[in-house]
Length: 343
Image 1 (cartoon, rainbow, N blue to C red):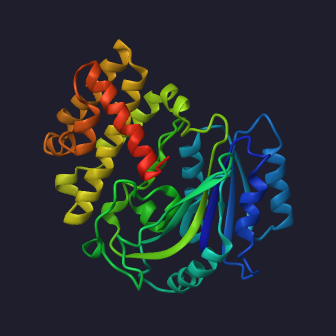
Image 2 (cartoon, helix red, strand yellow):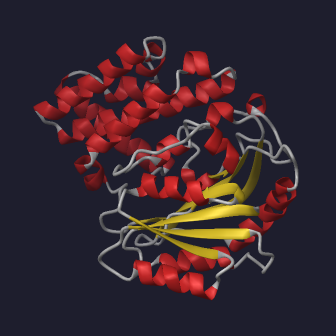
């Protein structure tokens, strides 16, 4: 068994995947306990497949190339999880990279845990928005939320700020935990990383946080899924993911820990807010119908959760009736984006 598997979903990623792979190999140190799975998700427009095979030829005991038909980001994450031999599982998108110094702080702990019968369930570290075209960066840390001196549980967690959520960038899961919950992300769908950092949480009992800037999240590539225009064009996929999350976890019955329930309630509120905001940006009769439908779906599927999420300040402000309410809600959203520097 390896200490950790790094899965790198790649789709026409030849122009930038080398930097991602090199950033992981930088802290390998030849110990043989790191596994890198390059998951080529049916790339057709460039040399992604060729590059993946070349990396395997150069590092046959560390880097492996998996070629599959196109299924989207979620499918690539699922495939990596199916092949993973590491005690821990970390997804790194092909246009992002890991910080060597930060990983040299984290790896000794992971190696220690990999030798234990009961290993820590979830390891968390900071991530950085690398807004390359703007020449700026924003660090998202959790030192006001999590203890920094050892393992803890959800009972020891503090309060999250509005800009603080656990993203795929900040988490390293114990591999068997993901398999035990039978995590399977939807295929041919963007935004499934929200499922990855939401659905497994009720089964997480032990956590370790490192206050280091581990993950570098590239922002600014044309056509990137978090681009505002792109998000509007893919709003149906955002709605699909949100419905999946509503169905997957009943916060009132599946989540025993009060602080975790509050966090997951806020996360789902944020997802509902994103749906509302972008549907109101589109501003058509069809988009307004879809906004009504997603709220009706939540109310029908989770009647106990609905009042808490509907009355969340995010959703009170972004769902004010009338055209004036729409403008106020969108104005508040863009102001919050600047104040809290979220993407």
